[in-house]
Image (cartoon, rainbow, N blue to C red; front, top):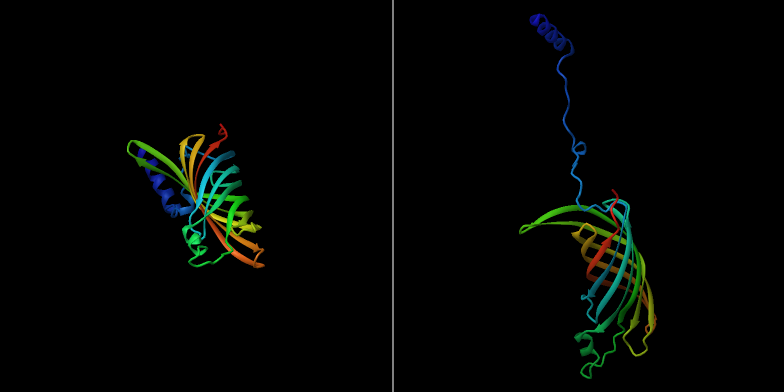
Length: 218
């Protein structure tokens, strides 16, 4: 009986031939492990302290609040409202001193409002001693408005349309808390009253923030 069953099996294999399952494609390989700190369908709000150290004439400071919503672990939107002040640098003070007597029409940061979208393609873990640090890396882009003031005695205001572009990292402290490190380059078109000119300007902001997430879905 066993011989007949074996013969039938071999005969069927000979008729149908070998089964070719093909090669696996990269798109068919999925990571099934769920992120410990997910952002899907969660809101995020926080406070951020920043500095603008790359301007030769002013050193700007910024305190900003953010509120956003993540539609998935990788995509989300955010609104940022910021305020601060730009101080004259030593270089500017030297130019306006009696030695040179040059009045440069520089503008200092006062306030801004921005709306951005965020894409976070990288989620990773890093071992620091006995602790596992979870973090992600994101990029952002959007539109906004920046208010600046001339450092000249006239104190003219400029309302500059702004395109913010940036990159950052979110380091998770708890399931509903995160530390954010960010570099945001604000590209501005600014109309200047004294010289009656339109200028292109960049306000690059390096910031650190503390954010809180809403409760995760079960």
